[in-house]
Image (cartoon, rainbow, N blue to C red; front, side):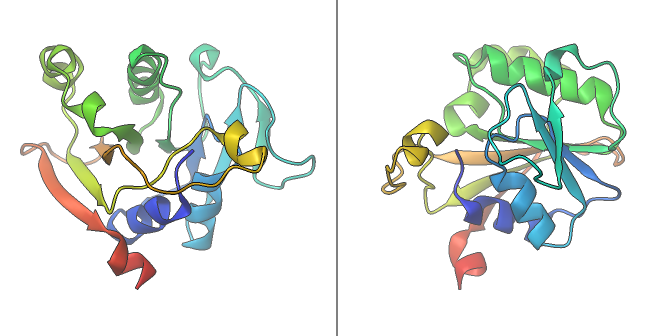
Length: 182
């Protein structure tokens, strides 16, 4: 589960035309961060992990079985499943969204030789934002049980596919927390 500052930083550098869907919203960090930044956002997940009556929660759904969405943009921290889940979610999102698909992933996911020859050769992201300092991203269940997020040991990125913009190559840059947390 990503720390709130990573979505805050994303909202400072990416603009969204139209609403955003987080199809694997978990406890809602991404949706809440986007809403706080003034972005219209909703979420769904395969299981409900937010309180009943949460206004932005659309309900439970298996994203891999969804045939259409009404939001042009998708922002997500997809389930990983040894990277196969994240790649499947990205590929599915790219077939459904008409605007941006933005994925939060471990830097190792980005650096994979297999994806360089596959997913990124077929559909390279427009932008990659490396997050600094390292966020701590323990499982949501760990946090719900009273654990604390501290001392991140993995490097994380936001990968952005902008289906409304021409592709001139992948731009790489850093999102620095001090610009958000100030």
